[in-house]
Amino acid sequence: MFTEPVSVYKIPRLEKEDEPMPHLISYIPLKHQDEIKTQGATLRIHHTPGHTTDHAVLELVEEDAVFSGDCVLGEGTTVFEDLHSYMTSLQMLVKMCPKIVYPGHGPIIEDPVPKIQHYIDHRNQREKQILKVMNLETKKFLTAMEVVKAVYKDTPEHLHLAAAENVTNHMHKLLKDGKVVSQGDRWCLVQRNGKL
Image (cartoon, rainbow, N blue to C red; front, side):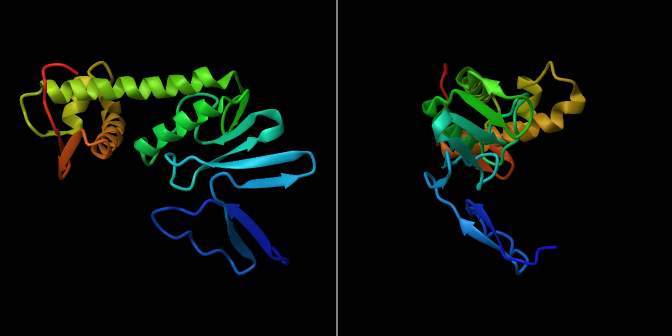
């Protein structure tokens, strides 16, 4: 147990206050672009919401390297609370053009920009598939599971619940983008057309 006060540096959560810490631990709030300097190293804070609202990556300025936490993984893809914010964070990372990424999980990523761009392209491709289904379906409002049955038809049925969660994340992004409206757990395109 701590006998001396300890400070925890973090980006505050956006949607609620951070949980109170034990009396010897205190939060020191960080902001986007804050810097922490030590001998021979500068860490620049980049607020990268998406995985969580308080997620940040740390740029090791002297080496043009990024500690990506759960934003970009060494293998596979991450889960996220907000796809819209996550995509914005990925675009920011591409623009930073780091030479190397040290992920929170998995192997180090050398030449990371193509991998980050692959994440973006994959999500954009999935969004196009979802929009195509939404545009072609005769039913006006669709549930996430109805979209899953069309978009993920080659995916084993036992994975459809996870796929529905993914579709729901896409729908929330599309809602923020102004492309769909919702009625409870059903979604509809704002404007239908013959092509996407």
